[in-house]
Length: 91
Image (cartoon, rainbow, N blue to C red; front, side, top):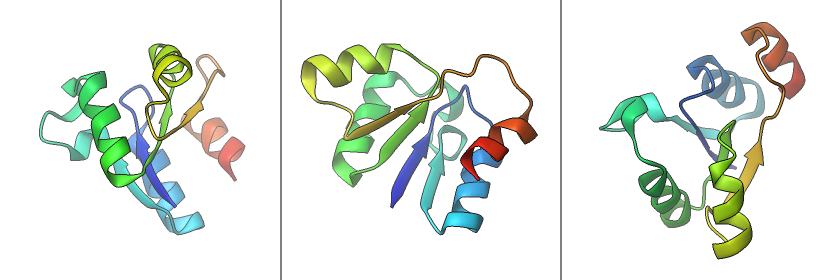
């Protein structure tokens, strides 16, 4: 499975998914514009590489529902929680 973790989520989530689930993970910090990567660029990369976008950014929901982009979407709607609690949700 290929995943792109958005800027609002910690890079540790990408590392966690790669190590524990064997996913091919990219965090926005790994991209040339890092956490300044625009939503459109994230969507394009998701479509080109068939990556699931994991994000807290609800703007992606509208794009997904109206345009079928990004490739797949996982919206994290937990509010502010600790990184350890977030990782536990993905365990």
